[in-house]
Image 1: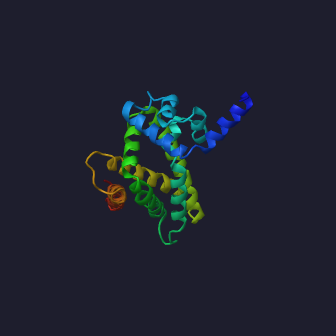
Image 2: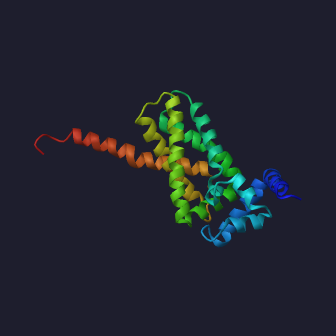
Image 3: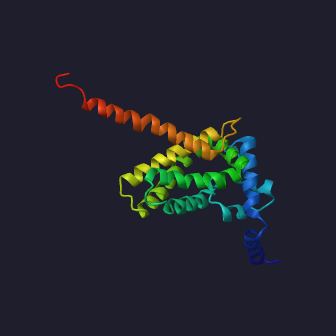
Length: 216
């Protein structure tokens, strides 16, 4: 077979290998869990999956993207749900509503895999850095959805970042060994604790400042 035909066949196989995406992702996550993210190479991933190196780069830009590849789908779901919230709902709770839908579907449906991903990220400084960038992207998507509902800045941006912080704080608890609480419940509890610790005490402090007698 001439070299040009071989190259053409390899390109075809890279696109049409049965369930190549799933095989690569499963192989990568298994290796990350076994030996750590930093020690795992693309060559090891493709060997474990029984696929060609070209196939890997057809589906993923690099090995880090294996960990975060599902975020695009979840972002679309979150944004759609936020836009569907009633106008009477404040922007923070609208953002939380979108995140809860993702938590109750994508995360809980693949609970074991999602928890393993969280632990893989927690063990890798490189992945933690990438996750911070991904959190920023998620906050941007949420802020855009809030603006579509008519929330102006800075409220849209602040609400988005607050919701993202609540979500990831809850997810960190969800990832803990022995946890049995659903992620949605942890999100609700985390939000309640945040509002209790910030909104009400600050309002009470404001009232106290207003009643301090003059001269004190």
